[in-house]
Amino acid sequence: MASIFSRIIAGEIPCYKIAESERFFAFLDINPVAKGHTLVVPKVETDYIFDLEDDLLSDMIVFSKRVGVAIEKTIKCNRIGISVIGLEVPHAHIHLMPINSLHDMDFTKAKLKFTQEEFQQIAENISENYIASV
Image 1 (cartoon, one colour):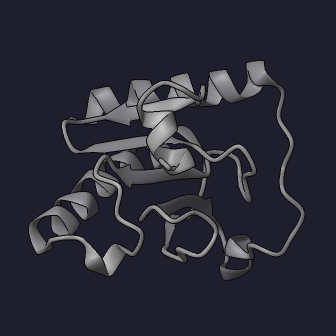
Image 2: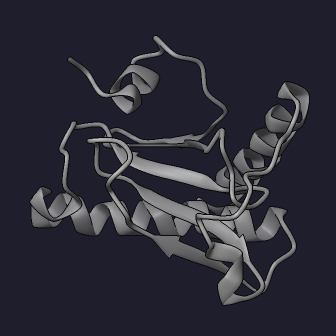
């Protein structure tokens, strides 16, 4: 059975898309730790990030960098935090989050809530900055 991320990429499940390339897909996390919390996934379904081929993994980091720059242009923050946990969904993914301190990346804290309209606006703003940065 396809992972939830594969179903999002295929358009079976709606998302707030940020960016897409031939090999990667970026979209807002619907249970965000921070405003602009984005997930970057490879289109090939692979459970563990270190099982990705070297060229795919390195290209995923470069794609994530471009998305991170767009997030940083959109959301006021000191940095973009990057995290790979890989336990919650069996599909390799990178978390990108605007942060001002180490504690901003605490996955145990309460998740933020946004309306559909707010999610859509955040995604559109980041996406516009992604396009401008490519």
